[in-house]
Length: 290
Image (cartoon, rainbow, N blue to C red; front, side, top):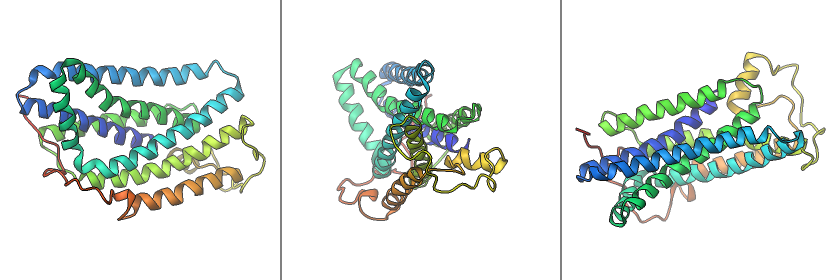
């Protein structure tokens, strides 16, 4: 449940910050007439994300077991790829997010209503689709039929909305670069578990060999149905009897990706970027809606 809460919080906060920055800029510059297209684009993006999630869930139910496992494994790998790209991108651009969005919004204002709708749709839609895919893959990996993953996501999204509103009102200040660094690091750990389980799905679909070759089996020590087994499963997608392929994939992803992501210099920190940080990099521009 915590891992899904983290997904909902991080992705939801990204979307909330985008909405907050766009609306605050329009209000501050006296362009309230452009708010309706922005909200329209946001609504379309949310509807698309929900539709995508429903299509994944209900569409997969009509498949054979092997087809379901093949789809689940493939989408899990895709979800991990998207989330990995996302956390690195946000790590490098969090401090410049406000100025970047302002530039895009200025261009959209000059082009008209359709461009405004598209700007809001693209800004929010990416996070929505990533969230739907990664949550579906995470819930599929959990595989216990419990509503807890969805509850975790809902709570994370609700927290993100509240934080976004506080940002807009100017009541909350936070170092976004540090926030996205720490939450991104935790998401990399979660993604490693999703990736390992994705390969397990591919093994069950007979796409990848080695299903019977276990790396270890500690089921007697860490019972899957125990509270601590459930906790490990929910947070890290841990299973007490992984295959050799799962452990190998988990280690090959987690160690290098987390090392590069947390590195103080180099690609993870955006070395070489000449763009100066925003003057208010720790807080988006705010404006009273009144």
